[in-house]
Amino acid sequence: NVNLTILLFNNRIYGLTKGQYSPTSETGKITKSTPYGSLDNPFNPVSLAIGAEATFVGRALDSDRKGLTEVLRGAMEHRGSALVEILQDCPVFNDGSFDLLRKEGAENRIINLRQGERIVFGAEGEYCVIKTGYGLEVAKTANVSADQIVVHDATLADSSYAFALSRLSEQDLSHFPMGIFRKVTKPTYDDLARAQVAEARQASAHDTAALQALLRGRDTWTVD
Image 1 (tube, helix red, strand yellow):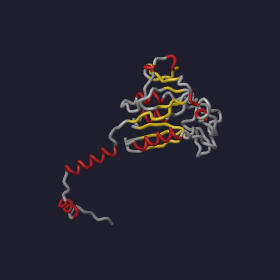
Image 2 (tube, one colour):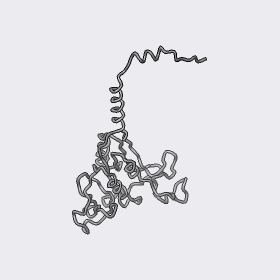
Image 3 (cartoon, one colour):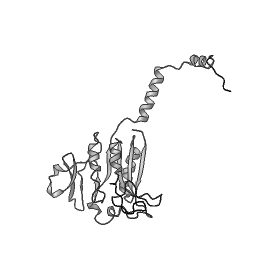
Image 4 (cartoon, rainbow, N blue to C red):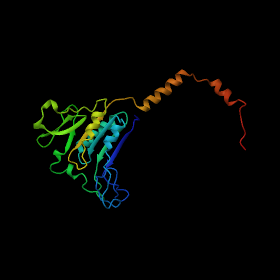
Protein backbone atom coordinates (compact mmCIF):
# COMPACT_ATOMS: atom_id res chain seq x y z
CA ASN A 1 0.00 0.00 0.00
CA VAL A 2 2.58 2.55 -1.15
CA ASN A 3 1.31 6.13 -1.04
CA LEU A 4 1.14 6.55 -4.81
CA THR A 5 -1.58 7.72 -7.22
CA ILE A 6 -1.62 6.22 -10.73
CA LEU A 7 -3.62 7.84 -13.55
CA LEU A 8 -4.15 5.28 -16.32
CA PHE A 9 -5.33 6.71 -19.65
CA ASN A 10 -7.15 3.96 -21.53
CA ASN A 11 -7.78 4.59 -25.23
CA ARG A 12 -7.96 0.90 -26.19
CA ILE A 13 -5.05 1.20 -28.62
CA TYR A 14 -1.26 1.66 -28.70
CA GLY A 15 -1.28 5.21 -30.03
CA LEU A 16 2.32 6.32 -29.39
CA THR A 17 3.61 3.39 -31.45
CA LYS A 18 1.28 4.19 -34.37
CA GLY A 19 -1.79 2.08 -33.81
CA GLN A 20 -1.28 -1.52 -32.68
CA TYR A 21 -3.85 -3.32 -30.57
CA SER A 22 -3.31 -3.01 -26.82
CA PRO A 23 -4.16 -5.14 -23.76
CA THR A 24 -7.43 -3.18 -23.40
CA SER A 25 -8.50 -3.46 -27.06
CA GLU A 26 -11.78 -5.26 -27.66
CA THR A 27 -11.68 -8.78 -29.09
CA GLY A 28 -11.53 -8.75 -32.89
CA LYS A 29 -9.84 -5.35 -33.09
CA ILE A 30 -8.27 -4.89 -36.53
CA THR A 31 -4.99 -2.97 -36.37
CA LYS A 32 -1.58 -2.98 -38.04
CA SER A 33 -0.43 -5.76 -35.73
CA THR A 34 -3.72 -7.72 -35.90
CA PRO A 35 -4.92 -7.51 -39.52
CA TYR A 36 -7.34 -10.40 -38.97
CA GLY A 37 -8.57 -9.16 -35.62
CA SER A 38 -7.13 -9.44 -32.11
CA LEU A 39 -7.66 -12.71 -30.26
CA ASP A 40 -7.20 -11.78 -26.61
CA ASN A 41 -9.96 -10.78 -24.24
CA PRO A 42 -9.43 -7.18 -23.11
CA PHE A 43 -7.61 -6.43 -19.89
CA ASN A 44 -9.68 -4.80 -17.10
CA PRO A 45 -7.42 -2.32 -15.25
CA VAL A 46 -9.96 -1.75 -12.49
CA SER A 47 -10.27 -5.48 -11.79
CA LEU A 48 -6.48 -5.80 -11.69
CA ALA A 49 -6.07 -2.93 -9.25
CA ILE A 50 -8.77 -4.27 -6.94
CA GLY A 51 -7.30 -7.77 -7.12
CA ALA A 52 -3.92 -6.31 -6.16
CA GLU A 53 -5.55 -4.75 -3.07
CA ALA A 54 -5.23 -1.11 -4.12
CA THR A 55 -6.97 0.90 -1.42
CA PHE A 56 -8.53 3.40 -3.85
CA VAL A 57 -9.82 2.50 -7.31
CA GLY A 58 -11.90 4.70 -9.59
CA ARG A 59 -12.92 5.15 -13.21
CA ALA A 60 -14.17 8.16 -15.17
CA LEU A 61 -14.77 9.36 -18.72
CA ASP A 62 -12.52 12.20 -19.85
CA SER A 63 -15.45 14.27 -21.15
CA ASP A 64 -17.43 13.92 -17.90
CA ARG A 65 -16.04 16.93 -16.08
CA LYS A 66 -18.07 16.45 -12.90
CA GLY A 67 -17.49 12.71 -12.60
CA LEU A 68 -13.79 12.96 -13.45
CA THR A 69 -13.29 15.78 -10.95
CA GLU A 70 -14.94 13.79 -8.15
CA VAL A 71 -12.83 10.70 -8.80
CA LEU A 72 -9.57 12.65 -9.14
CA ARG A 73 -10.28 14.61 -5.97
CA GLY A 74 -10.95 11.37 -4.10
CA ALA A 75 -7.70 9.85 -5.35
CA MET A 76 -5.72 12.98 -4.48
CA GLU A 77 -7.08 13.08 -0.93
CA HIS A 78 -6.57 9.35 -0.37
CA ARG A 79 -3.45 8.15 1.42
CA GLY A 80 -2.33 4.84 -0.04
CA SER A 81 -2.17 3.08 -3.40
CA ALA A 82 -4.72 4.63 -5.76
CA LEU A 83 -5.55 3.93 -9.40
CA VAL A 84 -7.85 5.98 -11.61
CA GLU A 85 -8.73 4.63 -15.05
CA ILE A 86 -9.56 7.50 -17.42
CA LEU A 87 -11.41 6.50 -20.59
CA GLN A 88 -10.04 8.61 -23.43
CA ASP A 89 -10.15 8.32 -27.22
CA CYS A 90 -7.02 8.42 -29.35
CA PRO A 91 -8.11 10.93 -32.04
CA VAL A 92 -5.57 9.60 -34.56
CA PHE A 93 -5.66 5.81 -34.24
CA ASN A 94 -8.87 5.04 -32.33
CA ASP A 95 -11.23 7.99 -32.54
CA GLY A 96 -14.70 7.43 -31.15
CA SER A 97 -13.74 4.39 -29.12
CA PHE A 98 -15.97 5.45 -26.22
CA ASP A 99 -18.67 7.29 -28.20
CA LEU A 100 -21.33 4.89 -26.94
CA LEU A 101 -20.74 6.33 -23.47
CA ARG A 102 -21.23 9.89 -24.74
CA LYS A 103 -24.05 9.71 -27.29
CA GLU A 104 -27.80 9.30 -26.93
CA GLY A 105 -28.61 6.24 -24.88
CA ALA A 106 -25.44 6.46 -22.77
CA GLU A 107 -27.55 6.69 -19.63
CA ASN A 108 -28.65 3.09 -20.28
CA ARG A 109 -25.02 1.96 -20.40
CA ILE A 110 -23.24 3.95 -17.69
CA ILE A 111 -23.67 2.62 -14.16
CA ASN A 112 -22.88 5.58 -11.92
CA LEU A 113 -21.62 4.58 -8.47
CA ARG A 114 -22.63 6.92 -5.65
CA GLN A 115 -21.66 6.17 -2.08
CA GLY A 116 -24.61 5.14 0.08
CA GLU A 117 -27.11 5.09 -2.79
CA ARG A 118 -28.88 2.21 -4.51
CA ILE A 119 -27.27 1.40 -7.85
CA VAL A 120 -29.98 2.40 -10.32
CA PHE A 121 -29.41 3.71 -13.84
CA GLY A 122 -31.17 4.38 -17.14
CA ALA A 123 -33.08 7.39 -18.46
CA GLU A 124 -35.98 6.56 -16.14
CA GLY A 125 -34.06 4.49 -13.61
CA GLU A 126 -35.31 1.33 -15.26
CA TYR A 127 -32.17 -0.70 -14.60
CA CYS A 128 -30.41 -1.68 -11.38
CA VAL A 129 -27.69 -3.90 -9.93
CA ILE A 130 -28.58 -6.88 -7.73
CA LYS A 131 -26.68 -9.67 -5.98
CA THR A 132 -26.73 -13.09 -7.62
CA GLY A 133 -24.84 -16.16 -6.49
CA TYR A 134 -21.25 -15.10 -5.88
CA GLY A 135 -21.43 -11.90 -7.93
CA LEU A 136 -23.60 -9.08 -9.22
CA GLU A 137 -25.77 -8.63 -12.29
CA VAL A 138 -27.90 -6.01 -14.04
CA ALA A 139 -31.67 -6.38 -13.73
CA LYS A 140 -34.79 -4.41 -14.60
CA THR A 141 -35.90 -2.32 -11.66
CA ALA A 142 -39.54 -3.24 -12.25
CA ASN A 143 -38.75 -6.93 -11.81
CA VAL A 144 -37.12 -6.72 -8.36
CA SER A 145 -37.99 -5.31 -4.96
CA ALA A 146 -36.22 -2.24 -3.61
CA ASP A 147 -34.38 -4.23 -0.95
CA GLN A 148 -32.81 -6.44 -3.64
CA ILE A 149 -31.05 -3.48 -5.24
CA VAL A 150 -27.42 -3.11 -4.13
CA VAL A 151 -26.53 -0.06 -2.05
CA HIS A 152 -23.06 1.09 -3.08
CA ASP A 153 -20.39 1.06 -0.38
CA ALA A 154 -16.83 1.67 -1.56
CA THR A 155 -15.53 1.52 2.01
CA LEU A 156 -16.03 -2.23 2.51
CA ALA A 157 -12.81 -3.85 3.74
CA ASP A 158 -13.52 -7.02 1.73
CA SER A 159 -12.53 -6.27 -1.87
CA SER A 160 -14.80 -8.97 -3.36
CA TYR A 161 -17.73 -6.55 -3.68
CA ALA A 162 -15.69 -3.94 -5.57
CA PHE A 163 -14.24 -6.68 -7.77
CA ALA A 164 -17.73 -7.97 -8.61
CA LEU A 165 -18.72 -4.42 -9.59
CA SER A 166 -15.73 -4.18 -11.92
CA ARG A 167 -16.80 -7.40 -13.67
CA LEU A 168 -20.00 -5.72 -14.84
CA SER A 169 -17.84 -3.87 -17.39
CA GLU A 170 -18.67 -5.18 -20.88
CA GLN A 171 -16.22 -4.83 -23.77
CA ASP A 172 -19.09 -3.80 -26.08
CA LEU A 173 -19.84 -1.00 -23.56
CA SER A 174 -23.40 -2.27 -23.03
CA HIS A 175 -22.78 -1.75 -19.31
CA PHE A 176 -19.90 0.18 -17.78
CA PRO A 177 -19.63 1.17 -14.09
CA MET A 178 -18.20 4.63 -13.39
CA GLY A 179 -17.10 6.30 -10.20
CA ILE A 180 -15.27 5.16 -7.08
CA PHE A 181 -15.23 1.38 -6.72
CA ARG A 182 -13.08 1.11 -3.60
CA LYS A 183 -11.93 3.54 -0.92
CA VAL A 184 -10.59 1.95 2.26
CA THR A 185 -8.19 3.16 4.92
CA LYS A 186 -5.12 1.07 5.67
CA PRO A 187 -1.64 1.92 6.97
CA THR A 188 0.68 2.83 4.10
CA TYR A 189 4.04 1.20 3.53
CA ASP A 190 5.64 4.64 3.74
CA ASP A 191 4.25 5.37 7.21
CA LEU A 192 5.01 1.88 8.52
CA ALA A 193 8.63 2.07 7.28
CA ARG A 194 9.20 5.47 8.89
CA ALA A 195 7.70 4.24 12.16
CA GLN A 196 9.92 1.15 12.11
CA VAL A 197 13.07 3.22 11.55
CA ALA A 198 12.09 5.66 14.30
CA GLU A 199 11.48 2.79 16.73
CA ALA A 200 14.83 1.20 15.89
CA ARG A 201 16.63 4.48 16.48
CA GLN A 202 15.03 4.89 19.88
CA ALA A 203 15.85 1.31 20.87
CA SER A 204 19.55 1.69 19.96
CA ALA A 205 21.08 4.89 21.28
CA HIS A 206 23.58 6.58 18.99
CA ASP A 207 27.09 5.80 20.28
CA THR A 208 29.50 8.48 19.03
CA ALA A 209 32.51 6.86 20.77
CA ALA A 210 31.88 3.53 19.04
CA LEU A 211 31.71 5.25 15.65
CA GLN A 212 35.02 7.05 16.26
CA ALA A 213 36.66 3.81 17.40
CA LEU A 214 35.53 2.14 14.19
CA LEU A 215 36.94 4.95 12.04
CA ARG A 216 40.30 4.85 13.87
CA GLY A 217 40.53 1.08 14.05
CA ARG A 218 43.27 -1.12 12.59
CA ASP A 219 40.99 -3.10 10.31
CA THR A 220 42.10 -1.30 7.15
CA TRP A 221 43.31 -2.15 3.66
CA THR A 222 45.15 -0.43 0.86
CA VAL A 223 43.74 -0.02 -2.64
CA ASP A 224 46.45 0.17 -5.30
